Length: 336
Image (cartoon, rainbow, N blue to C red; front, side, top):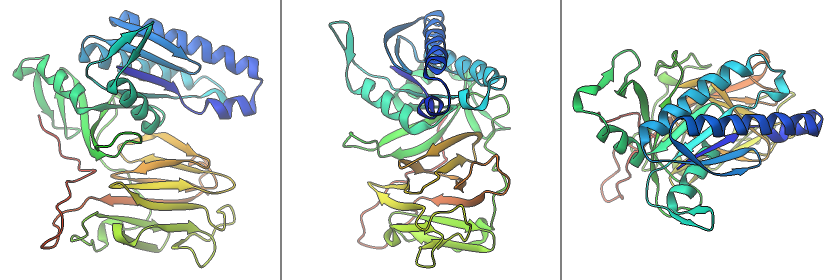
């Protein structure tokens, strides 16, 4: 099951004529439907600015979504900024039930949740999709990508995001990111602050998150959370910029994940090292922080003067004697 959603359509409606945005959304979703059908997929339903599709084979679903991201991203470069609505794609494999023209089951719910969590210009898949992808090709067609540090199955690159808590599901899910850009690699972009030099709390059962802004760097173990990021001195992490709200954002450790919540007046933007071209806009909502990346406070990354906080999430390593063992939530390791 594959769920494709247009990101930031609400912001587009707020800035432009509703009829103009609705026309663009309609044309894009119909194009998504044609791409799915061309790759042996079947459209289950259109949901405003989203599309739910079903594929019999994982490699067809991956080929279709990679083509979508590549083609749509190229097209967006020619569109005005308010209409640059990227695609958020989630996919999951498993048994479903068809009833009265609709489709039900855990894979449907999981695909929708992963799409919502992935952010624009990103493809997330559960481990069942990757398992089926591996089974579809002989072992000789699976090899490590030496340049990107990721396994490759029939030219498809992917990396593990580890176990992630998904809202509405009782158990954490093993999630993978499908790399679709020809330029994508696991090389880490330069972030503000010397995060790599900070001392880690390796014994923290929940791991830790490091934050850096200009000359300030701090590491917070999971047990230290929640903390706030804001302009006032009482904030857990102070960013003294006028565009940063007094209390701008909050970082919590919820169900095994580091969750960033925007509580500001002007919003926050998040981008991850492994996908620097994709930005997640937060306005009074949340996203999960994993691996490394940056948070722009009060202004987007396109504004070079924006107050930008670097983050680096380290999963739990070795728990102290007697503590419950916690599996890595956001490890970068993969199996090929």
